[in-house]
Length: 359
Image 1: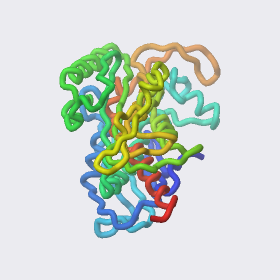
Image 2 (image 1 turned 180 degrees about the vertical axis):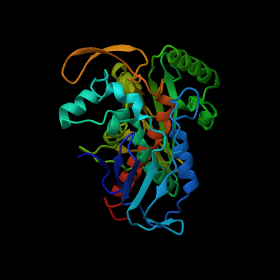
Image 3 (image 1 turned 60 degrees about the vertical axis):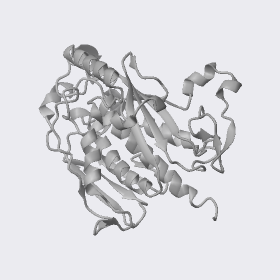
Image 4 (image 1 turned 135 degrees about the vertical axis):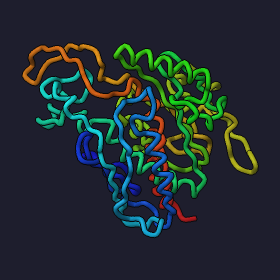
């Protein structure tokens, strides 16, 4: 079962949307790292539901409780176990979905695979379980700080409202200033208005998250099947509602000439660098020391507060109108999840790389 991510830094998650709790076990975390639990909680607060009028109305405090692996404020090298209780489940809202498959949800595929499903809020397929990823990602960020690596994601598109693809044009420190987590004030206002309009209609809308990794050393990633961008892509596409991934120039590179795409090497402060960064900080599947940047596209949430045609578990046609509390757009809350998954991948690759040669 694929409930574990990572090679050396490993996260195993458990829990469902309407169960007692979600949680996880982290193995391979370096010993001696100071654990700022306030920072970890703030990262969870960025993801938690009910934080603004453009998110689901579910109210969860998302208070994390560490069970092991931390002593006197530092990691011990032992497995770190943690729990985040579920406290605001409205399972009755999903009673209509006990026997009906929600369009574009995991209801049918889970039933096809397991022969049973937890219909309450999507069970294991719910984005609720990404809480565990954010805990692990926050710890990974604390470790990456020690080696000068920082990660910043932001909302770069909602519907047809799109930012310039060059992240260097924006002050990414402004990302958290808006509820949509967009560093452009005017575009953020437009995005919020669009989401509220869509929400009022009982509909949903998608968008894109851009992520930038700074300070990553050259040499992370493997040359064949474990390329760095492959790990990042797999991590991003494992996030609920993620539909696309591209790094560097991405799909735009298909329309470029080689002379437009290539990144010339230069000597910068006695170190090898590139004059441009169309490659997105990764060449041959291995980091080259430049900024790593990529984009993840998220589809509109599948749960609509409108009538939709579907079938029940016996194959009979029916009409379903969902109830409950749902995000009209997942993108703002996906920003910290993208950062968390990035941190997990980068730390795991860094720890793997330490064994590739003796210094």
